[in-house]
Image (tube, rainbow, N blue to C red; front, side, top):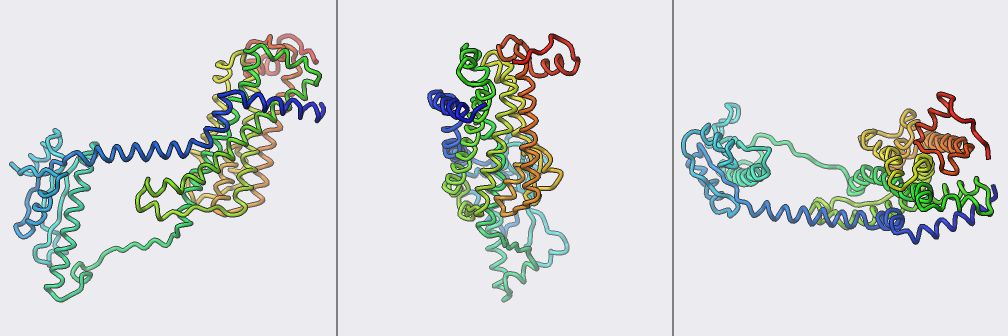
Length: 427
């Protein structure tokens, strides 16, 4: 195995990848344009759905409204999005109509609890709605808004009439004060999204190249020709492996850059005024740690995917064999979802999940270097095991020439677990 041979074959594989549309799409274009296009589609869809929802009229009926609070009913009637249906019968009958779908909401004005009945004219409102229906939930939002605004005006008038402050007439209220800064809000959002999508995109970047450079060559009948070039078999395999890992790293890094640059631009139209509360930034060491994590993930996914895809005889068959490795990218979905959770020694021992947690900590500015070292040792140790398995498999001639017809699991069972079958022939 020579470095010059590996470099020549490696460059040739990269040149071939540029001419392959599926590889360029999945490893380069998709990571760059995924988030801008995805966010644009989300905004467009939400805007369209919001427009449809705003166009629907909420059918509302009111029971027990005191005469002195008739302003609430007047406010509902002047709203174009609300249709006030005259109450007929009891509240229970109206709720029956609500269950049938004839109404969207039933509002009932009630006397308050004895503890707060001291204020003359005080009231409570019970809103019955169907939470399973969007138009009923929207009706509740509309009526709640009208009632809350009216109650604020009414309490203010009562307070002025009694010559006391607005707070005194209400007794007490719970006031929240958010101490989180814009940077902290942005960091939280990035820490919840960047690690997951980085892992997924690195796996996706390795997915197509790993299949194309193994099963794809067998399907095109170029695998045997490749083995006849003036280079050792080890050099060919290493060059192909580095090529797949490189595309995985490229996909991951482009994904992070595209997401970081596009997220701020879409937050405001996506969340309205709330979007102004987010400010995105990364600690200086976060990007190097993410690149290191992307490299580790790429080496792992490239090794695992190439081993499985090498047993396939067609590209389609290779997709089915490699898919289980791709699902490993979803481990971060179920592990360490809490933003307060940091990398621990036990999590650092779990491949893929450890890198996701390491990147999450880095985005938040938390760098647990001993655990980072453990994570890298575990990840590259797993890669080493995969490479040792690949080297063992390469010792069998029928595997190299493509005469073996079976999966990796069948191969291991026949050659190692049962210790049966034809003797291996070393090249």
